[in-house]
Structures are given as C-alpha cells and as structure tokens.
Image (cartoon, rainbow, N blue to C red; front, side, top):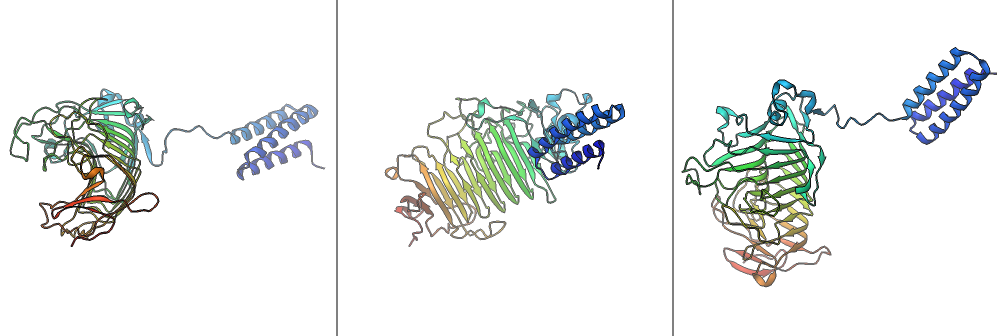
Length: 456
C-alpha cells in the first residue's frame, strides 16, 4: 500500500494533469483535497521535512492555478515607451520622436496615457523635413506603429481619457503645404498599426510663399495633414480621434486630411472619429476627414467624420474594391467654418467595386450627398474604372433642399482623364433589398433613377 506521502504526491500529480487540461474548477477541488490530506498526514508523520516538502508542493500548485498578471502589452510584438525612454532624452512629453527612433524589429510602440507634443525638435525628413509630406513625427520602417493607452470615448471623443498627441503651434517651416503631423511607411509583410490615441492639429501660422496652388497667396493658413500612412503592405487603424488640422478646397494643395492612407495594401479602419474643429462646439478648420487612396482594398467600419472644409468628409480615390459598414459621413447641423466653405458628402473618384452597408450621409443645403465619378483611368490597384460600380445597401440621408428631399448622387467630369465614363447608375437599396429612388446628377443633366439604370 502506498505511503501517506506517496498518496499525497499522487494527488498533486493528478491536480497538475487537470491544470494542463484546463479543467480549472475541478483542479481547485483537487487542490483543496491535497491541502486537507497533506495537513493530516504531516501531523501523523511528525516530520518537519515532510511538512516542508508538502507545503512547497501545494504552494507551487497554487501558483499554477493563478494566471500571471497581465503586463498590459505583448512583448513579442510591442515595446513600452518607458522601456526605451531615458532621462537623457529630456522632457518626456517632447521626447516621442527620440523614443520612436529606438524601436526595432517592427514592434508597435505602446504609449502611456499622457500628453505628448510633436514638432518642437524640428520636422523630420530629408533637408530638415522640407519634403511634401515631411512630418513632425516620423514612424520609421523599423517601427510597427503606435498604440495609446487609456479610454477612447467614441460617442464623445472630446471627453476621452487616453494618450493625446498635439502638433506644436507654429513649428511648420513649409510655405503653403506643411506636410503631415505623423507620417508612416513600411516595407515587408507586417502591418502598420495605429490604435487608441487622440491626435490634434494647431495653428501653424500664415503661408510664407505663394505660387504653390490655389490659395497660396502668402496670407492664408499653412495646411497640414494629420496622420499620413504611405506604402504599407497593410494597415490597421482603430479607436483614433483626429481633429483640428487646417484644410480648404484647393487642389492642390488644399485637400489635406485628418487621416490619409495612400498606396497601401489592405486598409482596415475601425472606430475612427475625425472632427475639423479644435474644440468642442467651435469652428471648423477643415481638412477632409478620412481618405483611402491608391490602396488595394479596404474594410472600413463604425467611423464618423464631420466638419470638412475640403472636398468631402470621406474620400475613396483610385482604390480597389472594398466594403464599409455603419459609417456616418458629415453632420446635420451647420458648423461655422474658418478659412473655407464647409463641404459635405462622400466622394468616390476613380473607384469600382465599392460596397456600403448601412451608410448615413449628410449634405449641406444645395450639395450632393454622394459623388461618384470615373473616367478612363486603368492603372494601379483599382485597375480600369470605366463605368465603375457603386453599391449601397441600407442608407440614411438628410433633406439637402434639392430633388424633393431625395438622396442626391453627383457624377462630374474630372480634369485628369478626359470624359466621364459613368453610364450605369449606382445600386441603392434599403435594408430589405428594395430599390431606393434617388436623384442622379450628371454632366448630361439630373434625373430621378433607380438602381442600375443606364444613361442613353
């Protein structure tokens, strides 16, 4: 017959095996039995060595039952700001670029819930950052992106308690186009990741030169894009709030953007909020909210963009097929605007294969809700966009004071590729699958249509 100690060891072995099979509740029952049996047997044996051995085994088993504390990040794919920062970098709030420069191996930099200011140490890039998209913060190719911490309040982003990055005022040295606050590009196969932070634009002063495009009169505001992601194999952006970057309707250079993704593979956007205002309830300073351009495809979900002074609140340009879900493009109220005319709607330019599910879109009085224009373009990830398709399944819109309150889709002639080639009306359905009549405005005139009608 096994000795008491052998029986106890057998029970401990059973508990270990149960832990490995993930039957945690039953393992805890076994642990209780082991403790009880071990106590009785230790008393019977009256051996201090036995008591010590049993205590150590029970303690070790208990440690196995308790999961390790969550470190708050994945050390395989992420690195903490505080692990790279040192006092020699100066003020923590101004040292973000120096810390980013130390990231290696494509890891994502995890930022503390704190205020950071960028742009004070000189803008990055060749020739002291005077390139077209020279950034205040450069996410170099060894860094896999940024993840903030804290709580992003999607319903009221102004009350968010999370990592907040602000572009320092009057630091941009460019003339009319100031580049980007945050610029990222990446080679290889790993995606770029941007999650859970707030990025704010500020006044960069007046232009210092003219002749660089519409509005470049040496008197207008300098224009700066917020987050600019370029040429990444793929990018994931989630839980971001971007606000207050200045733009107008000039093209170029006025079509600056709160969020811009250009030349990437698949783009995945979830729970992004952009607002052209610099304070809650304030005036709109402009810039298109979110743009996906020259990308291979996209999934775009639960995003809201308001207050654009640019061409539209949301833009797809020269981009391959993709799907959006539950987007809110624009706002019902009129927001006072600074330095431009408040614009509205969703612009689709040189696109095909676009599918919107459950789209809410607002238009300023007299403006279209949706723009959909194709010419003879046939390059890049979009391929040929001749008579490219647009499908909407489930749509809400406001009365823009035209077309008796109908949804208005406008097709216009681009200045880039000759005649427009749209000949088939977009497909617009409600959630039940029934056709939604809408006004289709083209260079040939406006008409009330239903899905798929052809121009004659």
